[in-house]
Image (cartoon, rainbow, N blue to C red; front, side, top):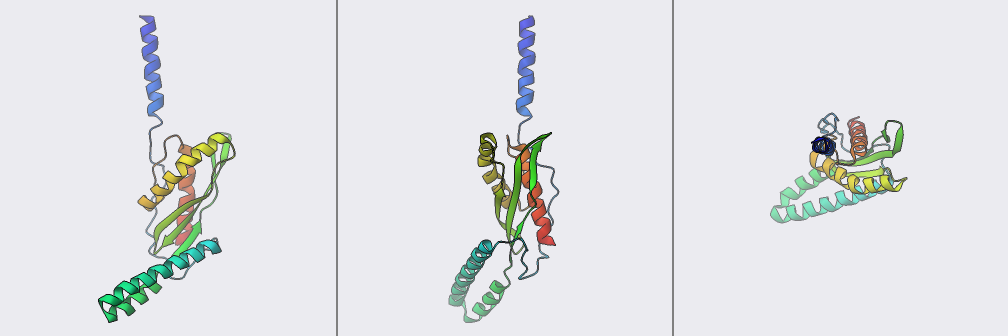
Amino acid sequence: MRRFVAVFIATVAGLVVLLSFKTTPTKAPRAAALSTATPGATSATSSSAAGSSSAASSATSATSSSATSSTAAPTSAAATASSASSTTTKTVTGTTVNVSEGGRSFGVVQVRLTLTNGKITAATAIQFPEDDSHSAQISQFSIPTLSQEVLSKQSASIDAVSGATYTSEAYAQSVQAALDAAKA
């Protein structure tokens, strides 16, 4: 009977520990709409490589828009060209956020966002924990998932990745800092 009680208690404790690792949303505030961005504004932290690729993609989309518009009606091509020129692409970089638990530090996370007309079109982690093999493994599976979460939710209010809670929280904080910088 004692053995049964001990096994039962151990099983319940194990289940409680396992269930505590389920995916939970991070406690980041929701980002406000970024519709106040001014045309042609760029961030001081944007890189020239990101800017040139953004300009190339804007030029490509403008060319394809006017090509499809000009076949529909001659007067709509001018309207499309003026709307294409009002496309605003902005690249902002969030702050570096330390990934730590108690007194143990795993590294830093820093996220760069690309916003087009106030919509997040790319989220790239430019720094992430990779100093030791365990941190690198966690980053390898969590960073792509977190980037997709940001793109789908269009804010820093993203769900934490199970097994990468501290990395998820740091990622969300860096995204929020980048969104705040984009509004400024």
